[in-house]
Amino acid sequence: MKKNILLLLGHPSDQSFCNALLEAYQKGAESAGANCKIIKIANLEFDVNLADGYKKGEAMQLEKDLVESQQLIQWADHLVLVYPNWWGFMPAVTKGFFDRIFLPGFAFKNHSGKSFPEKLLKGKSIRIMVTMDTPKLWFYLIYRASQYQILKDIIFGYVGFDPIRFSTFGFIRKSTDELRAKWLAEVKQLGEQLK
Image (cartoon, rainbow, N blue to C red):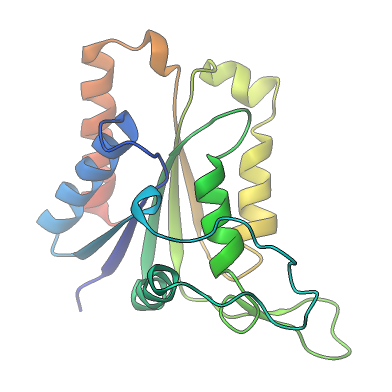
C-alpha cells in the first residue's frame, strides 16, 4: 500500500532553503512510490490568533483552509514539517496554524476522571526539519535543543505522533553551495526511505 505523506512548509517564503528541503524530500518520497501533498502554511487564509482559547467551551470557527488542512492531516500516514528557527522557535504563522487546528475532538479528547487526554492522531509519524543561523553544536550543547523537547512532548507527542524525528541544518548563513547540496541529497534520501 502506498504511503500518504503531507509536506508542510513553515517558512513564509517559497524562495527559502526550507522550501528546497521540502522539494528534495518530496522528490525522494515520490520516487519511492509515496503519495505526496503540500501545504504552504503562509499561503493559507486564517486568523493565527486562537482568540479566547477554549474559554467559551468550543473553539473558534475554522476557516475553509484550516478545515482542508485537518482533512489532509487525517489522510496522511506521515508528516514532514520544515521551518526556520526564528528567535528560538518556529515562525508565528506556523505556530498559529497548529494552535488553530490541533483542537479537542480533532487532535485529542479529554475524558472525565482522566489526567491525560486520548491521543486522536495516533498511527502517524512526523519528520521535523529545522534550519537555523545558530551553529548546530551550540544549539544542542548550550540550548539543549529545547524546542525539540517542546515539539516532541508537548505538541506532536501529546496528540499521538510516533515516531517523531528531527533533522537540523545550520548554520545556514555560513553554509556553502556544496554543503547545501549535500544536505539536499541527504533529505532526498530520507524521502526515499519514507521517514
